[in-house]
Length: 237
Image (cartoon, rainbow, N blue to C red; front, top):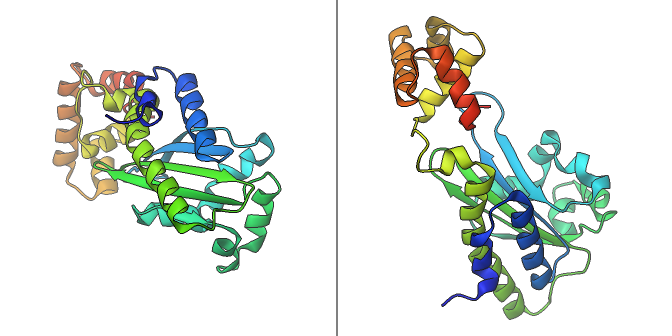
């Protein structure tokens, strides 16, 4: 039976409870700050980030800046890899990004571990723990810490999807395909089926079919009602 320090996050019901649980685990692991993020890729436009974290307020604006994320070697590793990364100052300085590390180091974010779990339909779960102190020099000790974070991440992912994206994880929510969601998003922007087809590289008829399928799955009578319901359910934003 797994230790409750790994599984208790599954019992969280609110964003506040989830945050308290991941912070508690982070402290037990020997780190001070943590960020758990659900990333939702959209076929067109920027990805969506939904985070729970205890990042210092003074560093918050820099941390959520997408331009910084595109340069940050830790974030870029997590974007492309599933294996954890143990990082320190050299991770940044080796890529000529010493000033970026120095900026976060002012807030006690000097060393850390980060990892990502990549799921179907363009969803990802990224978790990172940070601290001011150096990492352990004992390789076996570091191996245990990384393994503990990996095990916790599997359970935290389930809780994060349920709490942070309830419409996407609830079994009672209509299962719309990524293409159906994309056509609804463009319909929300006022695009016609012909315009949506051009944007997505499909025919006008196929675009209209996706919208009609989405409308039917949502139990609506027209595309405008379908957009409103999708918004209410959190399927589109």
